[in-house]
Length: 84
Image (cartoon, rainbow, N blue to C red; front, side):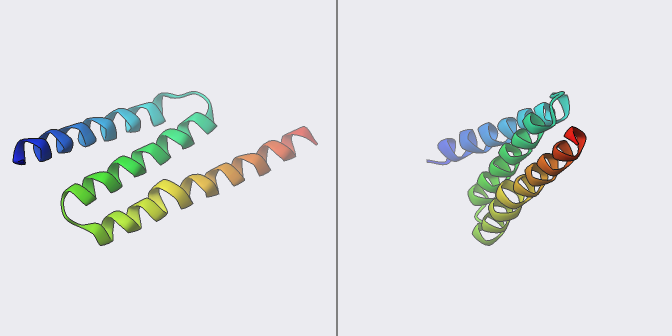
């Protein structure tokens, strides 16, 4: 059973690192924001695996949902002004 937990921890950390690198690497801002949301999901999953459910819920709410939504709304408002 502990081998499965170790494998899940390794997979979530690798996913966290890959999505963070992709968030920096993408040229389009929307793709970077989506990768940032995926990074928040992996962070929440890691907190859950580390038996910190309260931190995982907070990270899922803020890091995976709220922050990308605010960034997407901001991007849409900025692009709307460029058209005018």
